[in-house]
Length: 160
Image (tube, rainbow, N blue to C red; front, top):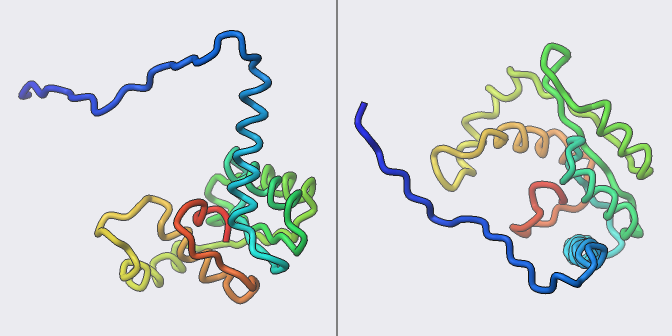
């Protein structure tokens, strides 16, 4: 096996600006910034949809959208049938807590296969991300239910 040298393009470094600044101040700043970004992408007086997987990112976006938005918030959770693991239990709890209009979409492997060629036409590069087919198929499935789609690049994968 040939020896390969590993190059680090960057390394995360801790940068504490003010050691006397309480930790709560950082959490308040993070909360403020998250709220501002979500507000920026919420449409005025129109329903909005959020992909809700049950993970931390989508839970946070869902909670903030439900808190900050005046129109209906629809949440969409995707699963691939009973034989595959999913987070429906967690996403359903979040949707109930946030009082969203929750939709559970089942995407079969057949559905993914049938949409694969069409989906590939939308990719910027030939590889794509592992979740590309799921997102494309679920957006196609939920399109007839949602009324607004924000075509901005940031947060687009969770909030539309």
